[in-house]
Every structure is written in structure tokens, then in C-alpha cells.
Length: 95
Image 1 (tube, rainbow, N blue to C red):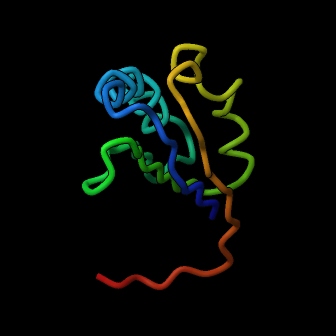
Image 2 (cartoon, one colour):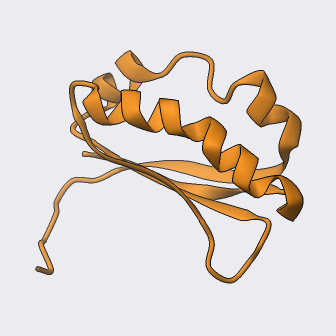
């Protein structure tokens, strides 16, 4: 399993627009083969932070979905980003 997790920083005045621009990508990802979850959401504490969490069955599923990354419009409002990819060997359910 692959997990992509992290956050991007945007101007707080641009965050709602940034999130709205992400809706189409989220919808596509959730329909993509191998996508287990895909979320881009506003941070509840930091008005300029957008949290990212993706879960995929495999690296090949991630690579099949990925194209060039964020759109030019999204890149234009991103002030910083910290996102990493994790390959998970085992999962234990907590629910």
C-alpha cells in the first residue's frame, strides 16, 4: 500500500479557491483503479494550510493516475509544500 501525506501552504485568502480547484482531481482520483482514499482538506487550525492524504493499493496505481502534479493555477497560489510518499508493508485496523 502507498500513502501520500502532507500539506501545502496557501494565502489564507486563496484557500477556498484552491480547494474548489481540487474538486475535479479528487473526483477523478477516487474513481481511479487502485485508489483507496483521496482527500484534500482545509486545516482546522491554520487558515493557510491544506492537508493532503491519499491511500493507494500500489505504487503502480499511483503512477498510472499521476500526470504532471498540481495544475498551473494551483501552483500559482502555493507558497510552500511538504508532501511525502510512504510504502506501507502492513496495516492494522483500529476500527
